[in-house]
Image 1 (cartoon, rainbow, N blue to C red):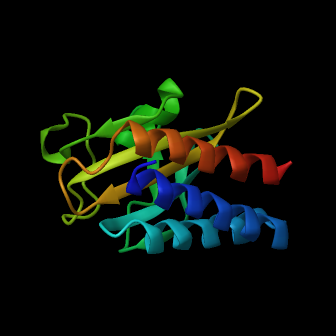
Image 2 (cartoon, rainbow, N blue to C red):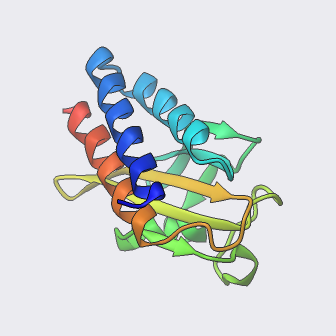
Length: 153
């Protein structure tokens, strides 16, 4: 197993521990964003946008002041939510549908959060480096989101 996968395996174990100790959804989102921020060194934003009344609204996160509302289809978060698929943007400066909330962000991955076909929100990560995210990140972050969603039931 490569170093990146080992790091993610440990992060998933830590998340399981957090979820066993707490059942409040917002508390778990808050701590899980802190866990990602601590684990992934190049992170400049790690957080959630929660789906309410037809748009994504900023939820618990770690990072600088951010965009508070995103319409479906707009930006990487809105696009991921609308398509219900994980999106990886290697260089946000070259992505047509990118909304710049923080100039330090160079690459982004967004994982949709759905339960029984219902959109709950998205997990949004921004990195200070171009090309930070790949298939390994996608696999583990999708598992991360799944653990969170299972804890919500």
